[in-house]
Length: 445
Image 1: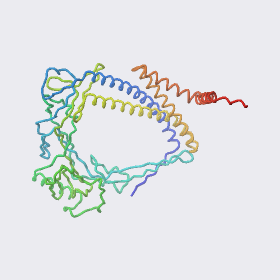
Image 2: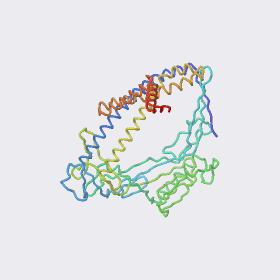
Image 3: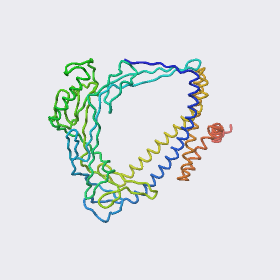
Image 4: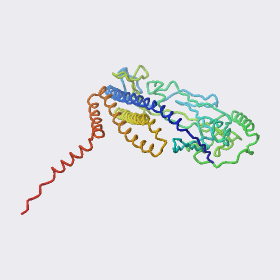
């Protein structure tokens, strides 16, 4: 059941807050300007670095054999990433010959969600209604239910135990006759589930510990007793085991369960209760990868371009030089446009904030305030786009003059159209051209 909370903000308080919003508007515009300028520089420098790297990159046909020919060269090579190391999760006694061993912990908890709606009242007051709803979800860390708004849900969360997440990585990963550096190792993503085989004595000890905690929190010593009514559990929150894992490792004790790559603390894996904990174990296994990096002895280091930017990458599977640099250029272009859009939206938001004081003064009559806000929204959008284009153009003039001048001309054209009756003049010109294009009437016979 939803819990609602209503708050009222007085007119004077809103006017005072709007002055803070004006200041924030200036901060947003300045921050957005810096972001837009920096982004263009980043994009140009990254593109130059990629062009430099692609021009220097050579194919290493056989990484299984070390060759002095490639010393100091930026190479593109494909081979198996492998390791002889055994990684051990000492807390659970799990050992795997793997590139990485990961322990991911989740807790079944009540989670609070809120949604607010505000309404302006005659006289300048604002009434805000906030609705709080609660759902049971798997989350990455325990949730403090003592801060929940609804008293009925306060103190509802607890856990049978807490366990830290963990990532273990092999230090010696071979790549043919070479050894990968740490950055390249951590880029390998050939992840598989770990089939657990935890010591039975350890499982029994865990089960007793969880049983004691369960009895202390619930006040009952047996799994059959419950202090809360059962809740229907959606399939989306049930514990799902990977199809690829055989179930012959399944162990079911009263409060601890092992199946596939999941270790579960709770009474039933597929009907979780608040407090349940599930731990998923995964490993990164040897795989064929393509590396673009600079050879240094028997290992690799990042390539340093002429503009001092560094580059190296690892891709899963076999890739060509052209494929890798095409993907890198596409990623650079995508991030450039994302940051341009973010910067422009920040500018627009900042400009709107500059008018927030006037808008708040008009809140005495909400209808007038709505009309004013609509007009400000249109003006702020136009000015924000034009301003952002100018900043981008100036940045490009600084980094790439030709394209920058083109963008500046586009921004100037938009200013002319929207601010100096450009629309009317364009329409007049269009009508004139249309009139000139009409054929003369044939003379009557």
